[in-house]
Length: 501
Image (cartoon, helix red, strand yellow):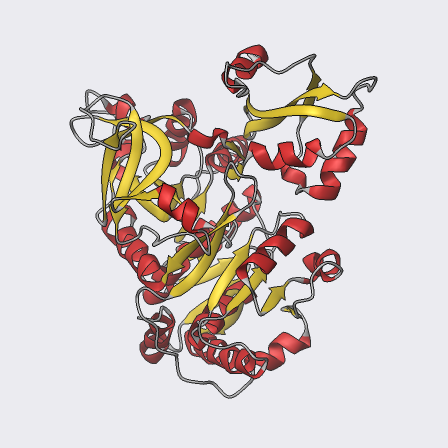
């Protein structure tokens, strides 16, 4: 079933209700939202996009993001949302790999991209996009549950991003799990898009459309703590997604201002480790407004959940252990802890977290080798390590693949290492994460310099900015005579982390 049908059905019975806002400004009712989306579908068809094609969205959060989703889906095509913080070269790779027919782009991201791709671009803030939305609407194209809806690019240890095949059925399953496990949604609620709509915040849009809730993109375009407090008081009740570091920053600002978050209904947090002291302080200040989820691009937002009640509970004998966990399996999946062969291990024993269920991807885009390694006998091998207790609560111990999570965004060391290794001063390099009170983790690079070269941090910084996104750039460089390695020549990153400590 095409996800765009949810918008059509909401528009049929709640057409006069407010739907889309930029800050306090109402942009569209649900009737206007549906009409513009299916007008865009017709306009895209006139530009040569057809069912099964891909359309890239390289945009900062804005009302047009929602039109991009539903216009593309209504046509029967699929979206390829790209993190707005990526370097243009990284965005260009995703556009090429996905085979996108065209790119919807915000003005601030267009100029650097236009010189390196040959795919047509449509500026969503200009008259051309508005004209496309004014085409005579077409009917919602039929789609099957298995059909591609969203191609989500997640990097891996190979250095190149992999496209996760997210189907209409997967997003619908995640949406159902949101209602069953995370929170209820009503037409009185509003969802506030501070976290990138190219990621989990956008995945939650369909269930809010289905329930006729309001959709608010911040006037600032991003995360501003005071703007959130003001918006909640004026336009609540608000629901939103936050990374743990956002929760920390929001708590600090709200406490300093003496504001308790009036108008905030629910904050769903995830995407990185939440320190126990941080969530305790947040609940003490704001009250029971928090729900934690654990997911991956390969099973978006839908592996485990720590309920509002569990996050706020201080009466259970093991409440601290539960609060330090990522919760219990969501209703639409099974979760297992497996040994190195994927066989189940007893409660309390650390192993690889394995998941199967309707929100699990069918595979990676045009990458059968990676698919075969990640999907084994129907189970998604997450690569993350953890253990289950006797009550089904999952506690994570280590993240595999050495991923660094900074500000809620995954940074994969291999990408940074490969960028640095093409610099003539660098002979070897290894990148690890360093704990950061502000961001969760900082990127740090240990560099073995080429003969006769001296460490020039400014030069390496400039090189990184020319090749990868700014947020992936190392915060510190350390010159070392050699990297610690095992007998097989593998760099011992655990030793490098001990060196940092």
